[in-house]
Length: 111
Image 1 (tube, helix red, strand yellow):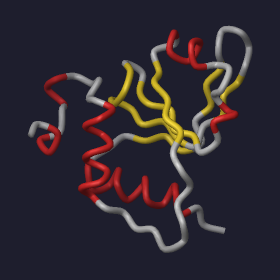
Image 2 (cartoon, one colour):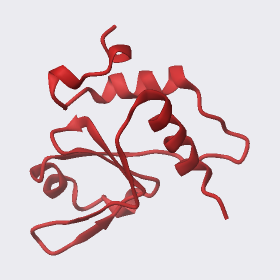
Image 3 (cartoon, rainbow, N blue to C red):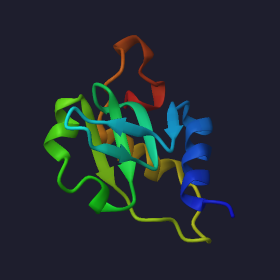
Image 4 (cartoon, rainbow, N blue to C red):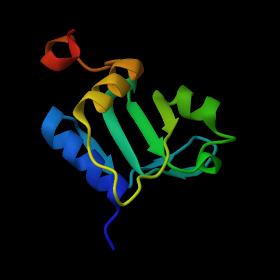
């Protein structure tokens, strides 16, 4: 069964030149393993933005996640009818902020 949420992020990655890692796992110093839907590199914090659809995955671990250099966001799941909308992704990414090398910042982000 296809995962519409991941498909939309993969389409955004292809269109906008984003670097994503699907089903990324982060092991925290406490030993807790956080399984995310994806990691978006170069946005949010220095190590990137962890994206989950279930707040329980990060609820008690926000400080420890942040200490490891990651931001995180909880997003709603995508409906079967939902489609990739470039302008909405750009707005979201602007809100999260670029954390990669200045020389690698996408042109569409420099507005």
